[in-house]
Amino acid sequence: MQERKTRRSRRVLAPLACLIALGALFAPGAASAQFMPYQIVHLSEPYQPLPLPDGGPVQNLTFFNGSTTLGHYDPLLPANFTVRFFDQVYGAGEMSVGTEGYVTFGPIGTANITSNEHYARNGTPQLMDNPSVPNQLIALWWDNNSCESNRVKVQTLGLEPARIHVIETHCRHTTPTTGAIRDYEVQLWLFEGSSTMKVHYGKLPNGWNPSSPASTGMTSPKDPSSGAVVGYDFLDCGNA
Image 1: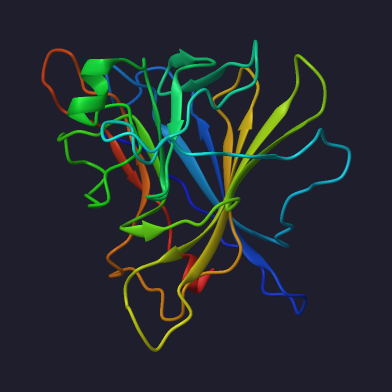
Image 2: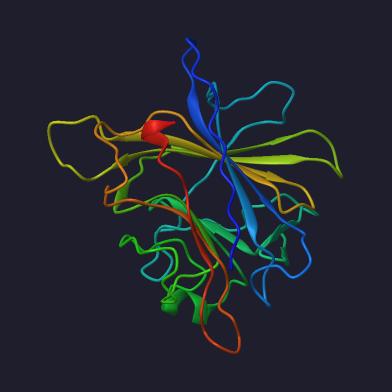
């Protein structure tokens, strides 16, 4: 049985934003024979857009416009920077981000483009335990989004081998189409050589709730024997 622990922070008067901290639980006899379970902790912290202090230069990502590569960017990670995701190690050239509000992990190739397996360009969100492609992903705000130029940025903090790579998306949710502020902003913090991550939400569309059409959470790679995936839903940031 998968283990998930949550913790809510105290209410304070300063304006705060939702932060979700993720880390693998290295516990014997853990839930899945394939993957160690994750602990998900719900916090509140002020949201600060890029650039962050004491970091390197901010890079604005440019998305490819070809018919088979629309809406992804690769490579996403700095040179010699690796992260662990569901017990697997990924590096430069093995992570993709797109305009649709999620990132994927895995090898990039022509077959992956046509199957959507490792390209973050699918605008139809799905449940996190759905084994249909794409898998091995983190859904920050997965929906049919609109993302203008210079709205997806990255910045690296610190020095090797303890760097933090921050991916920021400040885009527009397409639902509802009228009568609401539809912009959202979110950062994904990746810690070098670690399975620890942070998903930090700033502005959210008006009326966000757990039944929102957008998906937020993460999905493991497929189990090679059963074809099943392990899915985690992120917590309700509207009630943080």
